[in-house]
Image (tube, rainbow, N blue to C red; front, side, top):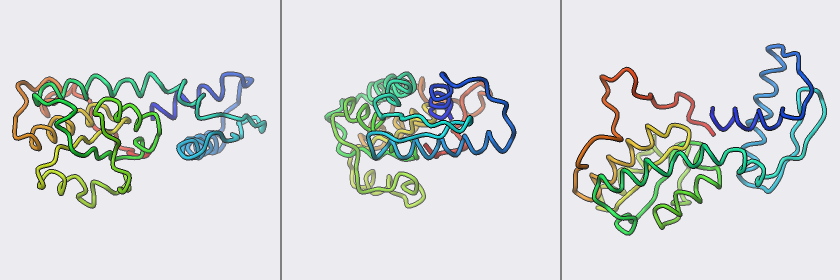
Length: 193
């Protein structure tokens, strides 16, 4: 939702005030989602605004608008590597799950932090359901699972997977939310982009 909100705001920034109807709002949300997905695999797309006009939006523009969201992944991944007393070189494989990991900037940041490109042969939308992370762990390989949409859930996954993969438990639980803590962020219900 964070990516959609930032992207929507950027698209509407130069648009005159819109009188929203439920149908128009839903149509625009679908247009934003379509454009976001297209920008994960191409350099630009044309977006139809609620006013009926169109705007050309590039991946570079999308990356600039969403960079603060992508950067929120940095600290939890670095912290979890530290808690697992691991270094990026200890990670053998990087598995990304959830639609957000299709965003090139997310994949690039994870690659930069871990020093390995995320596995390309997995469908991030079905990886968890297919148990894609389990074979990497049972083979003794280090794995990082991150979901840019839900940084807290991604941090939890990173900690658990690095600890299990390395055979070392984290020294504290600063990035593992206490399930009894009502203030702890919950995983995102919508795991699409």
